[in-house]
Length: 413
Image 1 (cartoon, rainbow, N blue to C red):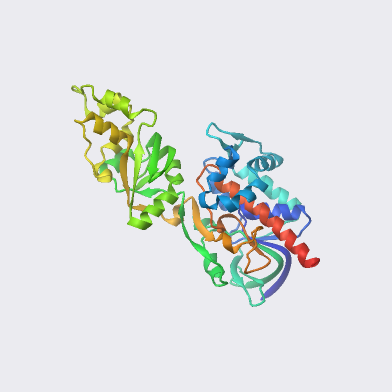
Image 2: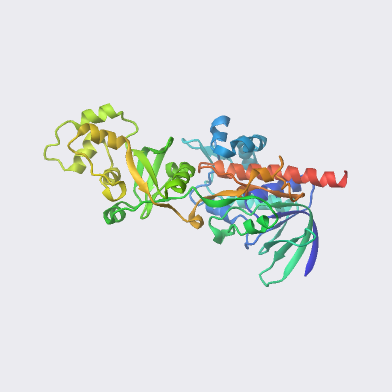
């Protein structure tokens, strides 16, 4: 078994790990990044497949509120490396950014690959060394890191400071499979169970709904789950619903399902029209129009919304077409029964992870001095919209600062 000494070891070559590597190398530390995949940034590239949403232009308080229960402890971390800092960093790599009408921020190239290539060139220039296809297997009795190579050979790495940035458990084929949870739990570190976040929900559609409307968008709607609500759009899938409004309510839906085994959400299909106006429009005679034509003209519903409204398999209701008031109220508060969540492997991100109480203010594991964690490994979640990557970058930056302080304290107690 080969024994190696490194000054700073980072396990995981995602956004958090690479950001920490850059900060440490820029400060003059020798950094080695180990990753189980053949190339760094695999999930980062996936995130940019439809346009790399880096961050968001929300006002600070609104931005931080997106992290819900984690807002209190994440706030100082994001305030230390803000959305503006992230955009400036992006520009420094030659990738200017822009904000869309929704406030989401993207590189002007709209892709992840040019940004990642420029980033890796910078890291190479700073002397960061990459070790691909090295699977972390925990620690030995002396506290050194154990890595397994594809050949089955193992190496032992002793580091002055270590950052674990292994991601959550979504899209495991890209490197994040959550196997690290058992390794940390063996050390007595408390882990909140990993769960699917920003995931689609399962609805038992009729065959007609699946065949004719899978892929259709439900635009300008409000979705509520209990007292929580979100505005935006959703997409009908073969198995249920996905999209920003569904993802934003993921924590609420999960809680409802934990209690009752299923959840009922409500859709306002005409958020821009008050119920009184809908009643007035629906009270006019339908004449010889078909139900679909009438709902389209009187209520302004798109075909997918009409189909959803008539979907007894999912709602359990027959639409009261002979009662304009009841019909209008149902349009504004249509129940949809959710029977499950998409698998963790297919989720965009992961909820759960190392509990914040296990970490000090610089993300060092209290039970394991000299070991830090960042990114999706930590117990926080956020909706899509730039909040996910921002927290990964920000926690990586803070962990690097903590590692630097730790090394300096050990050298100069």
